[in-house]
Amino acid sequence: MRRYYKRTFKLIIAVADILIFLAVVYLFCGGHDYSVDQKENCHKIGVSYMTMNNEFYTILNEEIAARVESEGDTFILYDPALDEEKQLEQINSMIDDGIDVLVVTPVSWKTLTPALERAKADGIKIIVVDSEVYDDSLADCTIKSDNYAAGEIIGKYVVSKGEKKRFVLLTHNIAKSGIDRIQGFKDAVAGSENIEIAAELDCEGQLELAEPVMNEFIKTGERFDAVFALNDLAAVGAVAALEENGILKDTDVYGVDGAPDAKGLIKENIMKGTAAQFPTEIGKRTGDVIYRLLEGKECESLILVPVELINSENIDKYGVERWQ
Image 1 (spheres, rainbow, N blue to C red):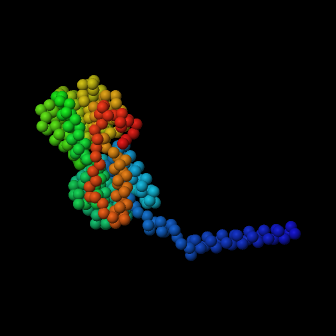
Image 2: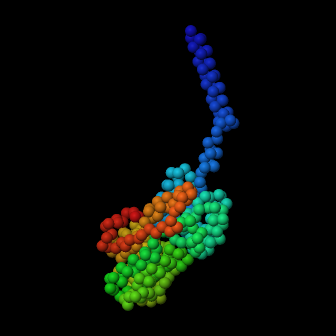
Image 3: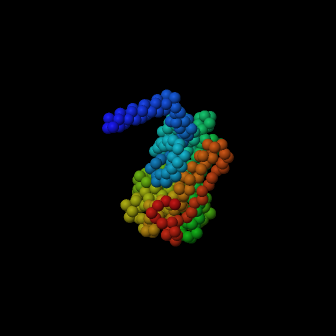
């Protein structure tokens, strides 16, 4: 009896081995190749912000990446680090790689045109975020904060205080978002006898450039008592320079973004205000537009996300720990 069970057990093992072997042969030779299906049906989403050295883009990117990954698609991210030529090369590389959608924040709103024209000719959907491109007909959709309003809201607030102020403006002269913010501020204060512009200094919106630029200007001895920076990174750089030179207490500083660092400085009454952006909202809307376009549905050509003024009066509403 024991010998019978042994023979039966060996037979079962042999049959199982044969079945496993046949299953493997079927999958690799005669079966359905699911991996091929996934590759054929998977969309490639290429993304290039002007820099990843700004937490705004990190927050925005998290929302887009999460949506793309939830759809089972491929997410490709490049960082041009504020180098317009590098961004052109990277976008061309993504086109060569066969992307279906390009999400882009231009380093320079004009010089990107040839790459966008090539993408358009290849049938790639183009979504511009946080800024604009020179030829807006190349974009299927532009999704951004109301950048002009961001500068304007700070300018109107400054004017409403009724104080005489002489401003240094920290700019980024090839980024359309920065250009619009500075212009919004200048237009808002243009009719006020109390507000003067002492200087406009390009810092590319970077903390590590804003600080030395401000230091150099302070050394000139030119009189000023307020700073408006195109973003909070530059505003924090200005704060560092003002503190180093012992004039922070006597200088009002404003920015744009609503970044946690800036909100912390507003809470401590070191900065006076910022125009808050909502990168989480921009990211979510971008994710929605990506899949509307891929499904062949229509979408708005321009989506403006409103901005809000944050100052010492309402800082507790926004908190200082995270972005909006």
